[in-house]
Amino acid sequence: MIKRVIDFFGDETYASQRRRLFYLVLVLVVIADFLVPREHAEYLWDRVPGWSAVYGLGSCVLLIFVSKFLGHRGGLMRREDYYD
Image 1 (tube, rainbow, N blue to C red):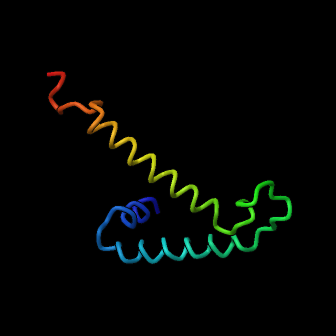
Image 2: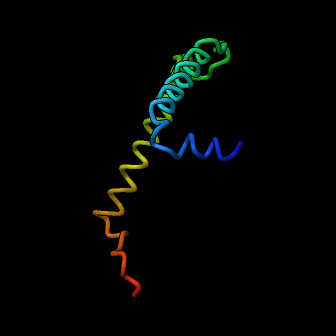
């Protein structure tokens, strides 16, 4: 069983099936977000369906770009043989 799961996520022959599965899960999450009651939302943007997903995606992208900037331009990243 575990071998099948590892093969599914690791083998390139299943790439199209993984992509279809990802899009299916994405659509199901967006549909589920429209079904959540929002009468107790504290802020205006909490009432917008999909706001949490957009905010999370934006935060992740910003975190990746900031960390790459700090690593490459900020001087935090060193050569592979730095400690040799």
